[in-house]
Image (cartoon, rainbow, N blue to C red; front, side, top):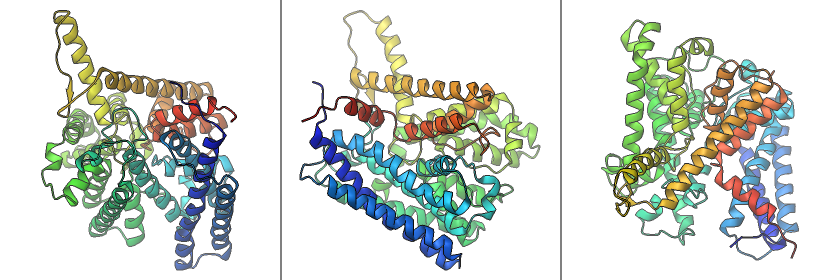
Amino acid sequence: MLVRLGSEDIRVVMRDVGSLIKWSSTLFAIPFLAGLWFHEAVFVLLVYALVSAFSFVLGLSLKRAFDTNAETDLKHAFMIVAIIWLVFTAISAIPFSLIMGMGFVDSFFETMSAITTTGISIMAPFIDSAPKSLILWRSFISWMGGIGIIVLGMMGIFTTYTKSAKLMVAEGRESTVRPNFRNTAKEIWIIYIFLTAFCVGLLLLAGLDLFQAINYGMSAISTTGMDSSSAGLIGANVWVVLAMVATMLIGATSFSLHYLFLRKRDYMAYLRDNEFKAMISVLVISVLLVLPKMIAFYPIASNALQVALFHNTSALTGGGFYTVSIGEFSRWGDFSIMVLLGLMVIGASSNSTGGGIKVSRAMIFVKSIYWRIKELILPKDSFFQKKFDGKLIENRQVREVNQFILLYLVLIAAGVFVLTLEGAGFEESLFSVVSAQGNVGLQEQLVDITMPLASKIMLIFNMWVGRLEIIPLLSAIGFALSFKKT
């Protein structure tokens, strides 16, 4: 039966969007206080204060204009998520535009890249001239975007099979709308803050200063990939490299497992999880594949291993960081680039801060090929159980996963089409679009502030749809088209 939206549903959506915008105004206290701490110009502080006030007034106005006592349902959540991601990005982009003098589309691009935890930056060439408070703001909204996607997964927003409800199942609650969701969200926040502090501590011990450690800690655990200076991590010592690898892997691991390990004291949770083991296996295999190529560039084996491990982790987890220049990265050869492309498409674990199609979906896709071959060779009336992670998988779930992957690839093709239409090379376009839609942030020399407007808008769309995992967006569009006046 077709689910249709009426006027009351629109009121619910706009009321909740208004409420979220209103409360998001408090987030601007972070860059404002940082600006005070760093003794920045009054104009910079005034921008944060005015944008916060604007966000509060806009949110309050929407909440009051569309006030209703109706409950928020899953169909509303799809539209709320799609809208708030755009609206909050637009509001958060204002400081970039006013303080740095960037065009609004460029500011929106930079902010969308941060909030979606992508990490592609077009302000990298002039980042050293940015106030420290603005750099911290960019890292902070990426950190918020990381926790946001975990909470949405727990709500059951992503309808294709991603094991997003594993945490709830572990607590014995398997319904879509959980009665104790607020307490569980609180637990996830505590874990996220604790792990962030732990990773910041690692980076401090590795040799970064406090400002760098905080920015890289937030950016790495949210698997964003934003650098805090033009130098970035180029030439970083081995301890910084290892600390960043550990932080990216923590962010790319299901927070359900972190919950079981830290709160339930299930110390074997990681070793029992097939998705986590598959992610580590894919990483190890990919490093071994590119290592011979890396040795050709870096004759010292330890250096080659360090570069291969860091950048393959960066691609798979969606971390998006470099320890070499983009020019040097572009000369690694087609095979190495192809391996990185594959890692970016696969992505991280479900219910993590990472992007991509997710390891669980990739595993089900591979298994579905085996299951199909088995169906063809067995007698017609034969029956066998299809299992994933110890649970039975229905044919409907397999179809959902395969349809998701097909849609994912179609949207990549659309992005490549637009970028090549605007004059970019095919290889550069493919790499940039896969990186944007996978919320990774690795980039070749194609992406900068001089890109054609259509290419910027297309990559913004790829980042947005990649972070929302397609299904909520399509559902929101479907509900919007089914609107009926009541």
